Amino acid sequence: MPATPDAFRAFLGRFDEGRSAEGLLVCLRDTGAIAGNVNINSIIRGRFQNGSLGYASFAPYSGRGYMSEGLGLVLRHAFDELRLHRLEVQIRPENQASIKLVRRHGFRYEGYSPDLLFINGAWRGHGRWALTNDMHGIVPDAPHPTLPDR
Image 1 (cartoon, rainbow, N blue to C red):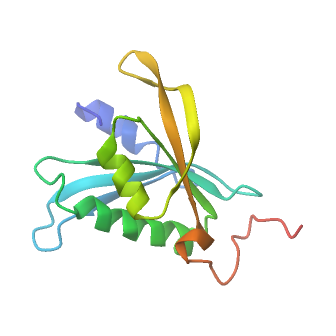
Image 2: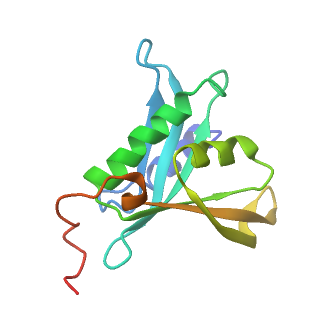
């Protein structure tokens, strides 16, 4: 997450009008406090109709179910409103909380990729998880207009 105002402005600049990424906040209903965020990154249309998820829970709200509820809402938005077919998430194997979160929402494990993402000064391996709209039970009435007929 961005640590300075300038870094935060650069972070927000990723969420453009062309819809290649969407940034969503997970907020508490009663107070409006921000419990976390979920980003749908690298949205690719055409034959792929895919996005890559990134998310974070903010202290002191971790482990209280807010991210699970928020992710559920984001999945509905991604599959119903954005009409994506597939979402992917890459998770470090030791991040058991994140693995439990995606399992709870029906993501399937698709394998391990060594040296996948550059984190804390080194290339780190991640497990790859994915969920399709039909696995989640949300198939839009009409496909996204960028999906070819054949």
